[in-house]
Length: 70
Image (cartoon, rainbow, N blue to C red; front, top):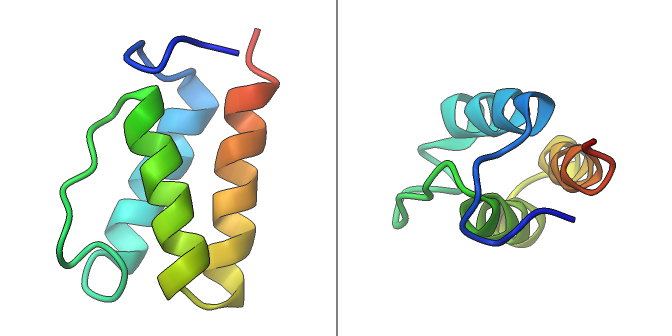
């Protein structure tokens, strides 16, 4: 797995952008996650906590893209 402050893999960054654009008003209204590994992890946690079922699936996909990155 990547370092917590490192750059995101391409697929994980793409999913992060989708999450931010789709759930900005409902999930990320009180946070500004960065495009780093730790930002992705906190975003996934927020999506699972405050989001709907689709947000939970997106969070799982984000974490999977991070875990299986080359």
